[in-house]
Image 1 (cartoon, rainbow, N blue to C red):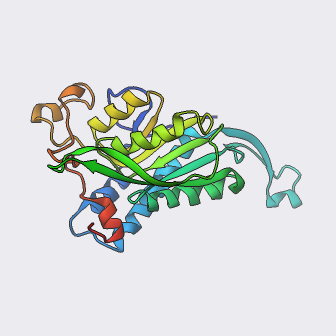
Image 2 (cartoon, one colour):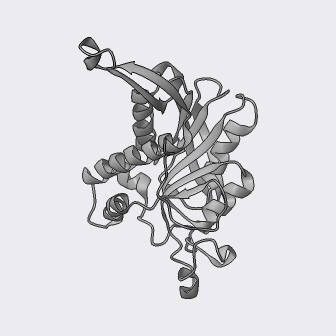
Image 3 (tube, helix red, strand yellow):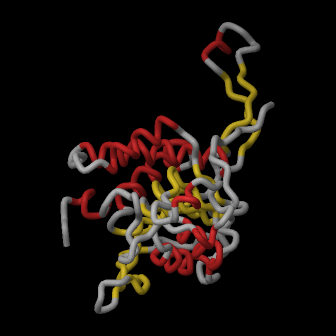
Length: 264
């Protein structure tokens, strides 16, 4: 039986970093980032993109099990039994909503997992997070102002769907809450992003070497022209995807604001 093969771009960021090479999803993501894309198309595209992204993660990261399933043909033919290696429905999963940009992506991932796993083994947690900035509006970090966590993560695959992987500040704080041992030991910690930067990858891998990163697009538009001609990660220290205010370039604007039609 052939193993599942993920289509991803070549890079030198090391293991556990997956940047998908998918023309269909790249086209959708480009449309999502266009100035003309507003509600309700914006959220519809978010749903489609995250439905595809969580499926890629399930295919690549979730355990499988050998099964024998009787088909409808079993009623007329004794050999009407499917023998296959499928996603193990007993796998335990926790989806973490990083409000507010992560609300819709988290719900999409949670609903998808409930359809393929035993729903009793799937949980959704919620973290209320915000960037912290200094007097000049430079990002200094992130903070959790509230949470709703429904239990431990022992033996679970924990997923963090967050569209924009800019500095890594917010996700680093969120990952810390789930990796300090107080809630048990997760099997895997996986972040699911639409757009990521070289700075984001470096921050998360420095803080959590075993974290697994999935992104649909790598943005490094603030890099010098000669760096853009190199394979991503080959000259990592010279790459940049963030402007002076630590927003992603080329990016797509404030996804949290666009998802909620709220500019505060």
